[in-house]
Length: 213
Ligand code: DGP
Image 1: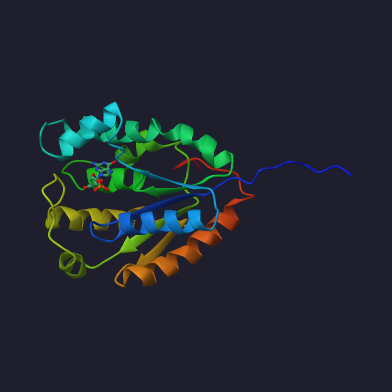
Image 2 (image 1 turned 90 degrees about the horizontal axis):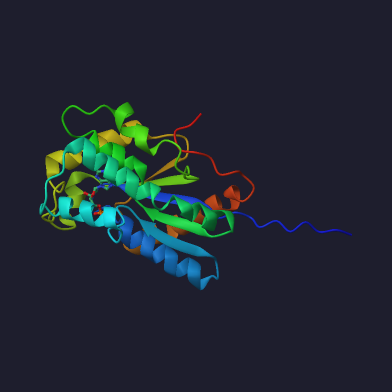
């Protein structure tokens, strides 16, 4: 008898949420526990500050240079496109756990004066579409208790408030909204279950393109 050799693809799982919602901590914990289970997973984060474009973004965020608002929006998007060849990893069975994606791109830029969401979405149209967006929510009060904002460009309470309102407008049916106001370990347990379900469900679905009908 014949056996077809098909490799199930990995899932593209994106974490979004306001500052101090625990995205980075949770992404790191997920990677370790999934590696321990022998699953093939890799982490990514945007902006990826290691590339040439990423270094420009990093200087901009650290306020050591100024870049026009439209231009920097396109740089953030370019920084995602330059990593889009990681799609090959997904196709060969590796799950990607991604700390921020194009939704942050739209939510942050459209929090500035004079930017509409449709314009902001444009450059990211066609990127690999996440199988799930895990959106961690936390009230501004609870976020504040976790520490003060740092010195980077967008780390101001009023701006962050606008960003969360924009995230609300970006929700689609692949979003899972999770209340992040719980202990690191409780949240981790909850997220492990969700991530496993997403990986199972993604196996026999084709990878789609972001914001393309
Ligand atoms: P992080 O390294 O996750 O703290 O992200 C750095 C900052 O950049 C954070 O304030 C969120 C913001 N950011 C992330 N992605 C984008 C994007 O695509 N566009 C804009 N304008 N800001 C972004």
